[in-house]
Image (cartoon, rainbow, N blue to C red; front, side, top):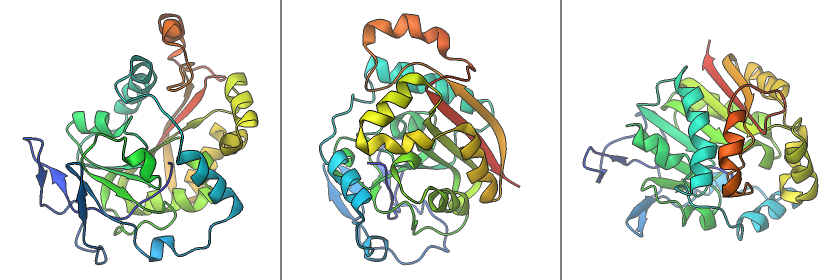
Length: 269
């Protein structure tokens, strides 16, 4: 789901195995003992990150993401959705070093960022989606209470997370806190007619009704970040676009104010 984290202390070596190295700096607090499943490394949620009583909205989100079905990360439509966004981001940010993929879901970006050569930790609140994520370093927890030291990651990235959480500003502040340099936001654009309709019809997606480039810029500025680049782009949705339309819709992978998605790249001042 779009969610959060607990920490993980593993990373991949060049042979693709999990290496017992510290992904996070020495300032991090003690961690729960990790457990292993399906050849991938997980860390159970810490009590502090899960202690708040669930709200009606969080229960609705949890129910939605406990059964939602997404296309696999290597599906042709998913590739057509994700890769143009990464091409744009790559102009401004080196996708290397340690990257936190916050709200990683089933791994659409976790895998791609790892292929760039980065040490990627995928973090989400939904165990249902984490079970579908093929990336090997995954953790579960709350995005509003990240148990990582300040400046733990070179890049903190999220895709389609903020419009699912009630306290967006707090999540953005936490992203900025654990980032050494860059924060990247990828969110739906309410000015796109299809995205507006989808957000209105699906209860768990209604946060998208308030999602705009202006708001994302304000949230980043409020967290002390400087926006380096911003683009509204694309007409390909990773889960809803028919594959037959991909050749036609690729022409919209450029700056268009009514594009389906907003990509914002920011850096610490």
